[in-house]
Image 1 (tube, one colour):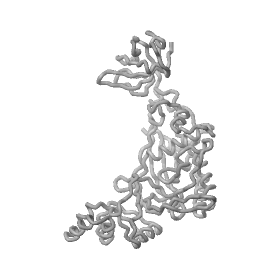
Image 2 (image 1 turned 90 degrees about the horizontal axis):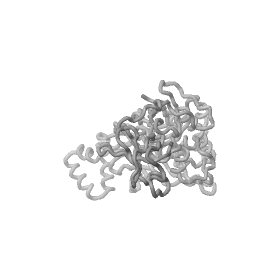
Image 3 (image 1 turned 30 degrees about the horizontal axis):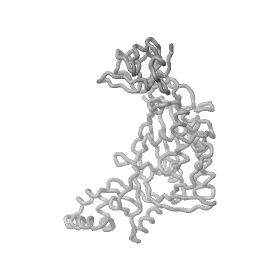
Length: 442
C-alpha cells in the first residue's frame, strides 16, 4: 500500500544518465534526429560486400569507422534502438566536428527502460533527503562531515537506524514523448565575467518551461511503519514534512541561483519563469531540483553551513537553461493533496505503528537494527548472554558493552539485569544473535 504519491513535472531539461557516453560508432545524426544503434545490428543489416568492407574499416581506426557509419546512415536509422530530437545547437556542434575531421562530441544518453527514459526513484529520494536535512538542521552549522551531520539531525548511529531505509520512492514509469539532445556547457564566473567551456551533448527529458511540453513522472512512496517499533527515537517522516522541507530548501536555492545568474540574460529569464511558476503553485506542490547538472548547491546543505563556499561554475544549455528543475506535487495514500506542515521544523509525529506489545517471537523474526529489552541470563569472560524472548539467547560481546574498554563483564552487567539491546547480526542457521548493549534498565 502506498504511503503517498509524487507527481514530478520537469520544467527545465532533465538528464538522468548511466554515466557512460555513446561511442562515435554507436549513433548517427540524420536531419534533426539522433539514432542510437549497436554495431552488431548495424553489421547484420549491411549487404555482404559492405559487411566485408566494414570489418576492414573497424580494424583500421575509430575515425574510419565513424565515417563509414555516417556514409551508411540509412542503415543505422533502420536498426536504431531509439531516436531523439536534436536541437539546432547540437546539430551545429555535430556537423562542425564532422566537417573538421575532429572526434565526435561526447553524447550522454538518458537511463531508460523499454527504450524510453524514466526518472529513477533514487534520484528523487536524494533530492527529498537533502531538503529534509537542510530544513531540520541548525543553520550556520560548523559541521563539515556530511555523514556525521546526517547522523546528528536524523538521529541514527548505524545504517540500520537510518529512517530513510524505510522510506522507499518507486521508479517512475517510462516517459511519453520524444527526448531531446542538447548542447550543455560549463559556464564559469570569474571576476564578474562569464566564460564558457567544455561543450558536450546530453539527451534530456524536455521541460514545461524550456520546451512547452508537460511530461509527468508518477512515483509511489511506501514507508515501513514497523521501523518505528524498533527505532522509536528515529527522525519522524510524513508527507507534509517532506513538502514543507522542499519548499524551504528549494525556495532558498531558487533565490540564490536567480541572483547568481542575473547577468546572463537567457538564464535570468529562465529563472524569472521558474519563480513565476513557483508563485502560482497550489499548496500541495513545490519546486525541486535533481539529477545531473543540478549543481553542488542543489545536492548539499551548503546554504546551512558556516563558511561554505559556493561553486563558481554552472552547467547550462546552449539557450541558457539550467538543468534539473521540476515541479513536485504530493498526494496522500487516498490521492488527496497533502497540506504543508504548520511547524518551523520538519519533524512531526511518526507514522502510525503497531502496538508496543508486538515483538519478535522467534529467531527468524529478528533483523539487524532492532532494539529490544531482555534479561541477562549468564555472564562469561568474553561477554553476556541475554534472553530477548525468541527461544535463543543472544550474546553481547565484551567489546559491545560500552564505548570504553571493559576489563570485566561484571563491571557493567550482572546476571538478572534487565537491559535494552540492539541487534547487530542474526545467523539463523547457526542460531547466533549478536547484540550491543544500549542501557541497563534495572
